[in-house]
Length: 281
Image (cartoon, rainbow, N blue to C red; front, top):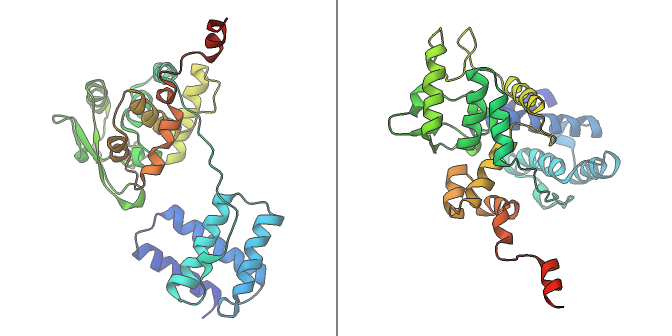
């Protein structure tokens, strides 16, 4: 079997397991890079070849910990899980750095919403923020999954191919109803182009970027920043961390705890240490 034939086999297996197109593309890219690096056919690649490739990505290419872990996972999927040949997962790579993301204040979110000059753009920001949506989830929202009478919706096949229920508050429901009335052509998607197909994630990202610039936001605003704001603001409202985990669709509670670190709640009761110094006099 040639390398390209093997790549097609891996692609079919990944699709069968329900992996996202983005994950599939990343896995196939790293496998192809491994073949190009070694200059060998897949069946002749040795465990040492794989180690040298990951070392090359780390030392020569200076890949981040997250990229190295993804490369290792891609190679492990074929050589360890499919072939049961090498224990690639045991190869140690650079650790993923834990960097805290930027968070928008409530006032900044409102400024971005107010910067929208049409109902579509306003609703994009409102629904991504108030429901904690990933951009891929927002573009694929279907009208049949939004029950505005019960104030709930369902995100289908989110990260990890999981469904989850989202809360629709009154201002959001009002915006949804107003936006739907403006749509000239019927479509199964909440947000759809003139040909009834959904928008791309890239188009949403550009809309968000332009709105942030118009609102004069200094922070680097990207589509995921509204999800970070959603989690952080829920924690600051005093919502239990386990409930936040469920609303965000996190498999691991440790992921949700990031928003505790981002919130102001952790500093409650501390007061002013500098003020305490004055009190000592």
